[in-house]
Length: 249
Length: 231
Image (cartoon, one colour):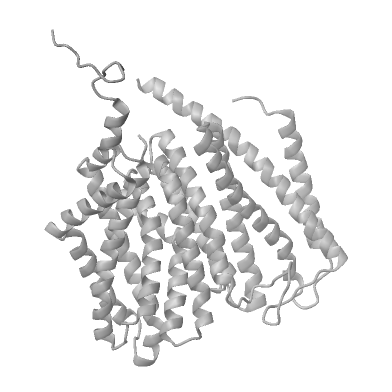
């Protein structure tokens, strides 16, 4: 019989305190979120499935716009922001759809749900990786558009607006794609759900980008910009609160 | 199905009477407007249905939140009833507005902020029905519906605010109007017709929602019976 060692304060020896064991294994919110982002990025950078699809699609849409609208030099400046945002919206839908349906199909979602983390970690992780994919595509589309239509899009303020708009779009899009991935109609449903709800993002972004490109006063740009920021904050907060209800089984 | 409660029977009759009186007030009693003529009378119904439509969407968002908190199916039925009735009323609003617009603005439609927001809002709630149709599990359907009404309910006012800041040609009847916008002021008789119209449509709205909720409970019973039979 093994004698239990005596402790100095004569407390009974227990093997391991369960709470301290759990605490040691429970990852922090940020670490868990970054783990999900890392998973998505490493999966994507091996196959480039999503980004290549989104990219080729965006380029095709820009070319179609060339025929759909008479993009002569005078009209170009006023129409550029609309064309860009339409492209980003459609390409973004592609990316959001694929990103979520891949999780569902390969049973990855169940694995994520079993992990000992807050459900909102999954939301933030997916939203950030969706945002990164959108930003990568935008980073390639913008120079191509600049070249094709001889418009200078390399402006910090413009890039800032595009970033804010993408954040809002990815935030709502991730939540809605989680919902639509669980319906019968799947990919078809996401644009129908997303576009009306994401209208403020598209409206405000197009207005702000337009103002910047046509050289309007800063006060004209500030208003839609403020609304864009408000939208981003409100919808990230709502999605964070509501995501639990969308993934529970 | 439970027999119609007495209150509902009374409400049915009250709605019909209210609608008849509102129609009389709008078409006969109210004076003809000086600038626009007879077509202005559409306004009494247009505002009534618009008010009811928007009210219903707000109620639906609140019912959605209540469902998410309590998980009580009755809130879900209430939410579906509110969205369904409001979608129809709001569509009527858009059509009536279009009818008014043709003589007044010489166009059936314009991409003015308020109209654009109306179109987007209507599409949000049509998307709501498509979402619900795509889900078979009733509990999941209720949850997703609640989340979407919440998102839609918050997005629609923001959409309106985004574009409201830019000039509109839509008449601003209540509230301040600046020089860019058409002004409309109402005389006493017109105000009577207007406010009674609002009241009448609210009564009709409550009546229709009540009926729709009853229909919803019947639908649920049918679904349960179907499950029993198929097992």
